[in-house]
Length: 260
Image (cartoon, rainbow, N blue to C red; front, side, top):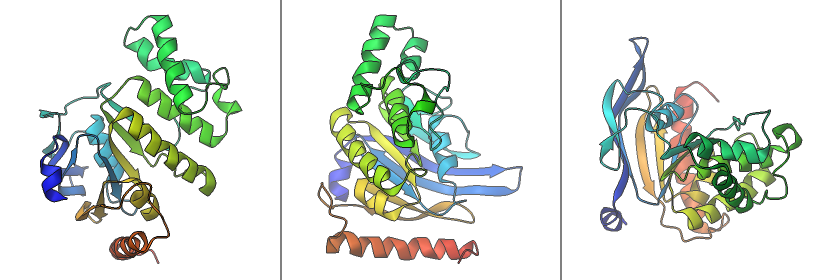
């Protein structure tokens, strides 16, 4: 698997990243890993291990204290439309319809209104919401709002998609449904995806690579290249064995935080 990864172009490289807040609070300490073109990498670990901070650095919202985030061989210094982001809380404009929310990015980029509409309709149809385009966010379920948020991120046609606990606020059934959607979208769009989650099962179901994060301070505890074939069976012996192995590692980090 390692040899196969080396033959594929590296899309995102986290190179010796450290982050200190207020001059003394070390959130991340010498974090390094890479994500190859078209892969899905999950950042997994307990609250406080710096997963979301790291994702914000890839987005260009936060600057590292030391080290570099490199995308397509160029250091990240600012946000870019080529790096789309999906948040846990949807972050939709409440006064705009689903269609107008998804059209927002293409309009900012200067596309003609007709083209903006065509792009938005394409991605709303991709996430199964083409019959709900005129609804406001308050008229949509949580799962539907997140589908709009995903469509909005994809409408900018980013090569890198950043997802910060995107399914964390959803019920179990909706969450599994959106995990299936995520795999289908991957096959269609071929984005390189960095996906933050607390769920070991979710990371194993989705990811090509799992970065298990240590805490106090945040660091890479262990990398797992997940060789299980798609579609993955959550009840298979290989899946469950790897789940137990990762659960043990995460549990060690949770205990550091005094959470029992």
